Image (cartoon, rainbow, N blue to C red):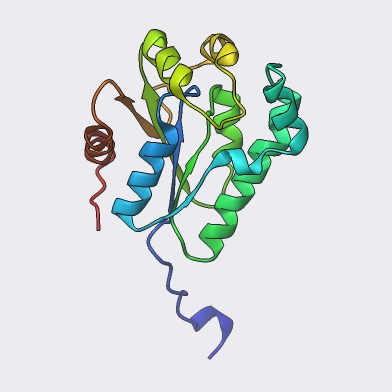
Length: 182
């Protein structure tokens, strides 16, 4: 047999990365963990990809700049690609507030789909005010909403309101994405 007559290698169904996005306090982690559990996919919290310098800045109440976010976004993209090479679909949280940040994530070796969680800033602020043990202070919320560029029609993703119970948020996301649990 020559190379020209070898059969095509088996290509698995396209692997997917769901990026659960939005400002701090919208419920990204809660939603992403539930999506991962229902789908049987691996989960990662984007905060674990931040270099310590970024965490230190945010802890001091200093908003990150695009230059700070570049290595963080590249690390998330590379993790998604690594998981895809290992044959796994994933769910990851990431604020992904700007289109150019999402463009970096879309460079991963998987189908990157976004689940944009949104709510009224007052609701999000109230949630942040009750959160403990996180380095992101409520004082940075305004800067996140100022930076927010919602998904556009040409981006692969869905928008889900978070003004309901977490299970209903997950149900809504799965329905809009056309994904089925289990």
